[in-house]
Image (cartoon, rainbow, N blue to C red; front, top):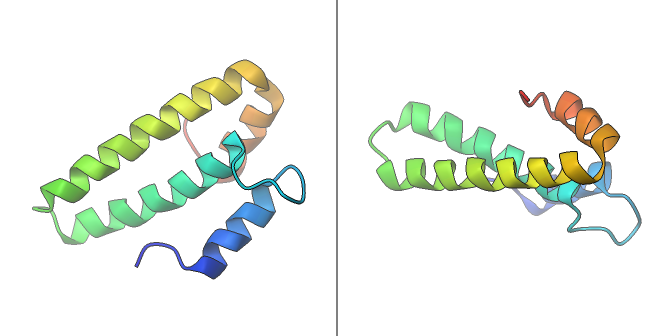
Length: 89
């Protein structure tokens, strides 16, 4: 299983901007990054899972678009987020 409810809540509370923020770009990027890490490990163990590979490619593209949006809107938050999540620029 990818993320438990507790893991999701922990990630959301760490990256949210206000008390009720669950869908900002930074929260979405953090959640997608966790899913990407899970799928990457899964595909190392199951190299013939082509449907999982397609899902991984879609997630990477979605995260790339969100990062581009965040970079355009708030460059300081973009730099902080990429450093904290250890995402290459």
